[in-house]
Length: 472
Image (tube, rainbow, N blue to C red; front, side, top):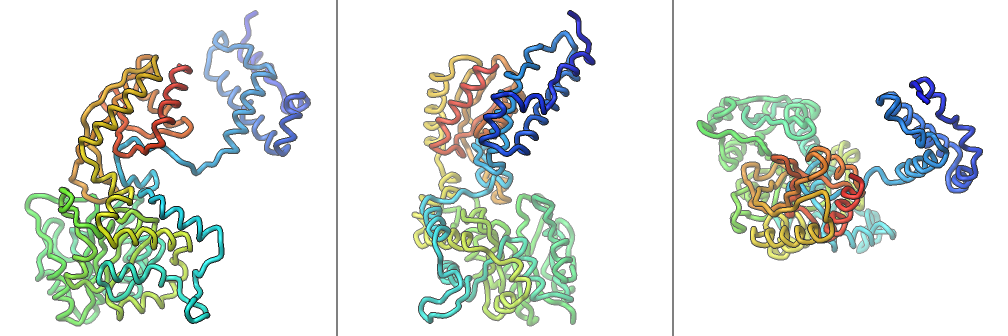
C-alpha cells in the first residue's frame, strides 16, 4: 500500500489515546500528568518533523506503534529528569576553559565546601568576640600574608572588582589608561564599558601600539581620579610596541597624589618562570611595583572558585568595602570556603602546584602526557574493536583563561579516525553522549588531549565510544 504524507500524519496517535494505555498509566505513577503530557507531545512533534523531512517510502510504520512511542517517551522523560547543568569531559586540552567552567577545585577544597554547606557556619559571626562579624575576614589574612597587601576584599568576579574599585575611587573623575590596554575579553567584557558603568570618565592616552610615560603625565589634571593599567589577557601586540611598566605608572601617580590601580585579569601567585614557562605578572610583583589597588580573578590561574579579589593599600580598599555596591557584588559562603581552602595551598608553592588541578595540568611533562595517551589508546583499542582507529599523536595544549596566550604547551593526544562516520558526526555524537565529551576536530580526526582528561574520565570515554560504535 502506497501512503502519502497526509496519510502518514493521520496515523500519528492522539495524546489522550496514548495515555489510556497500560504502559502510560504506569508512567503516571512516577510522573505528574503535566510532565507526561509534555513528554508525549514532544515525541509526537519530533515524529511529525521526521515524516516531513523524509520521502513517504522511507517512513517505517513501526514508528507509529504505541510500543515505539512509549520507548521514545521514556527517553524523553529521562532527558527531562537529568540535570541541565552537569559534568562534561574536557578533551580539548584547554586547561582554564571558560565555556567548560574554568578551573577545577582540589579535593580538599571540595571537602571543606561540603562541610560548610551542610552545617551552620561562622560566615558573619566573630567567635572570639561573640558578636556579628564580617564575612571577608575568612580570606583576608591569607591574601595579605601571601601577597604583602595591607588590605583585601573579595567580590563575585573580577569584572565586579574592577567596577566597584573604579566607582569608589574615580566616579565622576578621569581614569587615565593606555589606549593599547583597552581590551575586550570573553563574554564581551570591555574595559571601556565597565569604566562607563562605574561612573569613571575614560581618558585614553598613547596609541594602540605605543604609550609613553609622558602620555600619562600630559593627561593628569584637576579632574584626574587615578592611573589605571590593564592586563591585555589573550590579546598581544608584537613588533613596534611599547607600554609603560607598572612601577613607572605608580611612581607618577604617587608624585601627583593619585592612586595607581592595575587589573591583572587572571592573576597568579606563582612565578611560572620557575616552572619552565614564560613570565606571567604575579600579584606580588604588581604590589611591589607600587600599585595601590590590584584586582584579579579567583577561578583562573589561581585555581579557585569564581571570585574577584581586590588587594592593596588600606586607605583605598576601605572606601571600596563601604561602597553600597559591595552588597550587590558580595560572595557567598561556598565561594569563601573554596577560596580560603585554595589559598592555604599557596603557603607552600610546591604543594600548590601538586594539589591545585589547574597548576598541575599546566605543568605536566610531555613524557607523562605521552604515557597517559598510550595507556588510553591501548584501552580504547582493546575494548572498542569496531568503527574507529586509535593512534597517539603529538600536539599542543593551551592554558586558556586569557593567561599565557602565546604559549603552546607540548602535549599528546589520542587521535580517533572514524571508519563509519565522518569526523564531524563523531564530534556531535561525543557532544551528545552521557557524559558529553568535548573534543577537537583536526585533519579528519577527533583529538582527545590527555592534558585535561581526569583519571575518572577513562572508563566513561571507553563506554561512550562503545555505545557510538554499536549504534553506528
